[in-house]
Length: 310
Length: 274
Image (cartoon, rainbow over all chains, first blue to last red; front, top):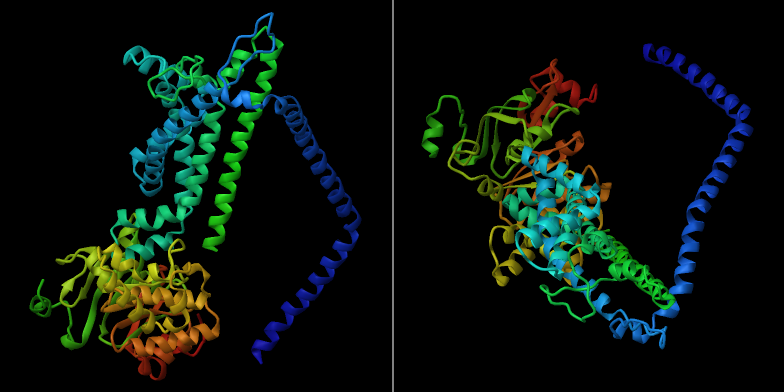
């Protein structure tokens, strides 16, 4: 009996509470609807403000760049136009080859180190790891010309390696490292602890759990981070400007001077020949296509992996 | 450490050395000096199911995780007292933590198959972690443990499929198979059915009753009916006034549920609190 009398009061309170909620809700409905509409409109406007310039940029890029992407563009080295042949720009095969070589070498340098450091940061909690993390985060925000200056003074001046693909790759690798480290760390931290425990509870040593359980589970995030790092590096001009040397030769050798698409853009944009300035749009479009393909690959890879693990 | 030394020790009470899988003596676990569970002294009998029951915060899971040294990973965690497995103190004795964990397996609260591995790879993962590579051995272990976990018939044709394609109940039985593949002496189960529906729960409970013939089971459960249905012995824990869990009573399940010594045990099993 006692229990029932105790219950009576809360039920009454609940009833008045319910009435009050209903009353306030009705009274403010019109105002809430209006706020909702205003916010929706604001969202649409901000979306337009962001999307319109981007669309215009892409439109210009395709309109001016697409006609430049001819067979010659991909297969011939640059020529210097003359009064007799003002449109004889040749192609940018040297820059395309150079860009690919630079990024392949940079990836080979940066990905293994970056992934290992990222895993280390995620799996250890000591002071050294904390220091490394701060360094990586600072490096991620550092201006990219610094990487070029570093490669220039260290490789070219101190070690006397001449203008070369490898010097550019080194600069790009330093640029890619923090991106890879941070992406890997986040991916590894996102692996549920229960999986680590499951591995350890089977008598696995911690490094085996890292290699066989944690890294495979984090692979989607790690690969996505690497691809994003490459797509950032491929468009960078500043780090390679000082150290790759340029030149018109089709070469990919690590110790030869090479050209690169961003460098060609930088050089040709200053040209007095309209034909060469027009070629810049082709190079720019090609770079955007590269980046687009890379990030699309990253997305497709990520969603495919997600499906497997769900 | 030999068995003789342990039995000689005045602090460890060995009721029946041949029939005891693990002995706990005055076990306490603390995190950064804050005691989470203490006073745990009882024997885990071989080939029986021992359940740890008690309300939230009473330290059941904390105590269970001490039995295969999973607290080693947590910074600031400290386990005191003695936990003895077949005559060897698992914290101070001559046994590596990896050896301990191959002998004392664990099934977790939520099914946690390795998401990047197939069903087959999951079952044999423990063997592979410990360096076993021979295909015939792995195949045999996979089939035996999947059969023991009552999963073989439904997965036989799709062993190479990702483990994440299985239902929750199947995933949990896969985790049991994964633990059984190591042929452990003791299997720790941390609320293994709390994330499962009643039918999947029933299957796991049936499994436990058959499994205890070959492996000693220690199970944490929130579900008192479950403890009453499946366990032979029962440890009742309760949160003390300083918010540390402590062992209130340990006895056969029958005694705990029908005629406990402590009135608090009776209150809990009758559902008066918790």
